Length: 202
Image (cartoon, rainbow, N blue to C red; front, top):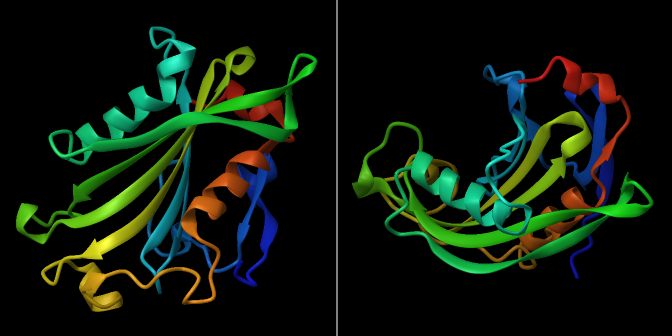
C-alpha cells in the first residue's frame, strides 16, 4: 500500500465534502468549470476526478444506473464503440444516510479509448474509467463521480507532453494511491452538508 493519504476536501462551496489525495488540484483555478461540476486533476499522472450534479434521470432504473451513465460518458467521448465494461457493483457510503440505512452508490468500471480535447482518433489514449452514481431522490439529483486512470498514452496525445508516452507508471511505483482506491475513498466518504445546494442545481 502506498504511503499517500487522503484528506477531506470541500466541494461546491462546502455544501458537499469527500476525501481524496492532495495531489488532485482544482481545475477551476486554471479554466472555467460548469457550476454543476467539480473537476480535479493530477497533472503529473494525467489522472482526474470529476463530481457532477445532474437532474435525476427518472427513466433509468436504479440497478443499472451506473452502467447507463458509463455508456453515456463513452458516447459523449465518441468511445461507445470501444467501451469494454470490466465490472459493476455497489459501494456503501460511510456518512450519507438514506432513511435508516447508509446510502449506496452503484458503480461501473470500463476501459475505453479517448482523445484529449479536440484531438482526433489518431491521438487516442487507453484509459480506465471508474464511475459511481449516488441517487439522491429526495433532492431529485443524480450525483455522478468519475475517475480517469490512463493505462496507455499515445505518443500523438497532448498527454504525452505532460507524462511520457507508452504504458502509465503504476501508482504504487510512483508512491501514489492507486486510482481504484482514490475512487473508492471519494465515493465512500461523499457527504452532503447543505441540502439547499440542490434547490438551485440543474
